[in-house]
Length: 462
Image (tube, rainbow, N blue to C red; front, side, top):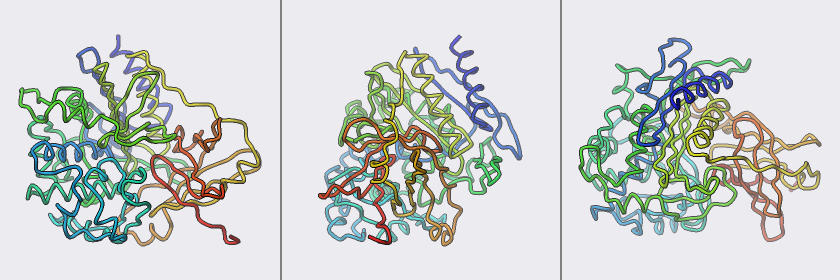
């Protein structure tokens, strides 16, 4: 009955959001349940199944973090050690930050590094080394250890630490540390490894609102640690089950100590008003839903979107992968995860209700907010507030690679209380929560979105 109900809901939800192909896996009551719907590509369609390969985006960070923790468990890396112990050549825009930044700062997004660099460093074995050599170009938004702000670049730097410590390429190191011992034979980093298999391609909506195949399939090799693992929901569910377990592979090999797996799920830094999590563990987003602690990570890249959520106290996992976006895929995945939590566990995940539109409060927050590669614009028409996020035109024009689609604007509602918290009520970021930061005079100077700090751009008259 659960299989039938899941399949029916997945088909219904994929149809509602116009997803070409979605795959879902659930671990419940000691059994795997899968439901798949649709096709790999609108241009060259093949049926999606549980072994169809998707690019998982930032879910990749969980593999990087776990590989790093194997090195920690083996005494080869120390979490509190400065990054320069392992990457002495590191140069950042802020020399003090470069000297003080620790491995832990990278793992739990307290490094103060900006989100990412838009650079092409090739497909050679030196791709990560070349990426790190360019990190002096990256914005330093805060001193290390002072606040959490999500950073793709930080995880690419972790990948370089893994290379330096093991003497292997990042991809080979992860294979030896994790993929091979765990039997994850359908998980890869290189497109060359998947071309003979069945794989999904991303889709984005064109100016007419019609879905079209994204021309770029995955990001550059230099971004592999932060966002470019390729896998299927069958392998991803096995990965989730490993993190629910005691650190042993299915063949009984102890891949990681039980206490180390547990440590990764313990809170290291609290997050404020964030729909994705109440805190960071070591990589993981931690969130209490309806009185139950959930542990998870999502990912997005070039019209493909993924989710991995586990509930350790209930021995439960749900994974999803879809190939349309940015608005459609994220909402489809979220709806499926919420349905699975409610249907299988009786756990209800609801968004908070915003307060009515307030002219004075809207006037305080209207404007542009910047991060290294994106601009977020908050506007009002006198009746409501909207928020949209685009890649900066100059970044897009100068990029040597195709960049992900801009995020369509949607509504923004302020939440009750005096904490300057909000929820996005429509568009690609629907359901995301965050908060505004004020200076000592009370003026709004920044906004946190999905764990990333955007700094307010002064108006011309200011």
